[in-house]
Length: 301
Image (cartoon, rainbow, N blue to C red; front, side, top):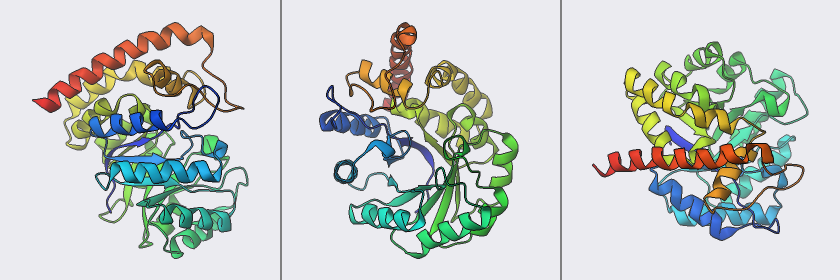
């Protein structure tokens, strides 16, 4: 499996009482397919994986696999702070029908680089699912360094990396390991265009929850090397990037989804979007509608 293009790190919709909202989940999945998203992640950090019970994880992943029905890859977040638990969660995801595991560096424990090599090899050697490395130091407290990625990229069941660091030097270092068997994906929406123009295969995005067609267009332009049009479209998305970073992820994106009738809120310790940003959210929903309409018209043409 070769991952590329616009891949959405899905938010998890809850109802007003804080329970899973499966109707909203189905709406979100349908929105992604209609917007030509090229892959989805279930129960990643944007999906509030740490707040989900096992039965909820199973329900979300099983229903996503059934609804997508093989049209695009379904990645499951399986990373835990312990290797044995990560292996167990990856097996669970495989049994539920996932196509690959997105495995974040073990949160909180800050293992040494040699420990990260051993961790990822153990998960990949178990052969439950192909593994995508995920580096997001701001959330985990640890950094998967390029030289460590170099040790892992040749493993036959490690198929790529989602890199959330935004520095161009980091992306350039990782692109050295890109191959037909190892994809390099941006995990940072505001710099994804730059990364793809430099050679990255795509983006695992937060913003594509609400802008699926727009991110598909961005990826198509950037991956084709259409620098001017890609940068112009990226500039039109800049206000969305700014809004989505106004508070901790996934607070802003879930506010935008709620304003579109998809879900109601988050689970503690996350809180709803601050009232000070409510007017900006309403304005952003209008801008999103306009951008998405432009893209869908171009798809139809």
